[in-house]
Length: 111
Image (tube, rainbow, N blue to C red; front, side):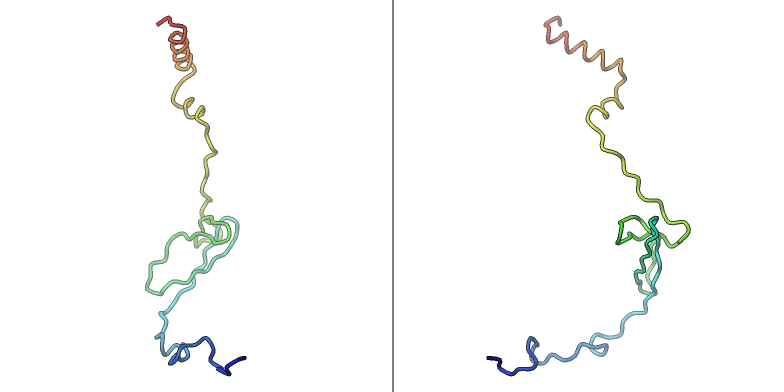
């Protein structure tokens, strides 16, 4: 059975939360940012805050800039490289052949 309390879930002495209790909000600027996919984001900044050059797009995650016609390029991701690909960057085929020949000679007991 309900107790008939109309202010259910509220604290005793709690009043309305309005502008008077919170104070005045700081003046704000809404700045538009565009990413390379054409998404527009409008975060708000305090009028005296320094506005960043880029902002991450909340829809695709690409960087967004303030110039609609020339947005920043998306970051270039390098493809996954195998261990062999890294070895080939450091060693030439001739180096590989020499190392292989030395290892085979050790296994055969020639060295």
